[in-house]
Amino acid sequence: MRQRLGIAQALLHDPSILILDEPTNGLDPAGIREMRDYLKHIAKEEGIAVLVSSHLLSEMELMCSRVVVIQEGKFVTERAIGEEKQEEQVTVNFRVHDPQAALEALHKLDSVEVLGVQTDRKEVMVQVKDEAIPLIIKVLGDAGVAIYRIEEMKQSLEEEFLKWTGGGRIA
Image 1: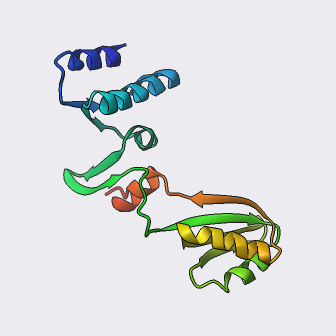
Image 2 (image 1 turned 60 degrees about the vertical axis):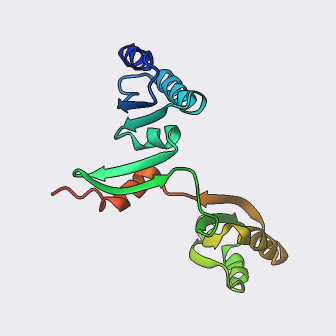
């Protein structure tokens, strides 16, 4: 209730920016979702900039459109969340019935970088641009390779954070 009351008090003065520190701290799962949805609502519908400071990176992925990383008082990076540049490559995992046949078919394509094959799990992981995925599906189909699942492999904000900050080494 204190979190909600504090936000209500801050909104009484019709601010253009709302700065919050760990706004979901101490809330139950339903309260967290309600708070997240409300903050997204006031940002979008009321035009209030909402700046949230938090260590809960998985929650920030769900709540925020942009992230700024500051380490030891210094700016590290600023990125949009959920937006990918069209020219960037994506990592895609294909679950197939015959990974070896899939590998042979994919080696004929110049635009595909095969990152790995796990024959025990019947998976082939590739790195491609989005527009190459339909071609991969066609090539695998033409080679008689049954595709059971296609999954984009994304790094979580936590994984990205650790990469940006040097892996979280403790001095």
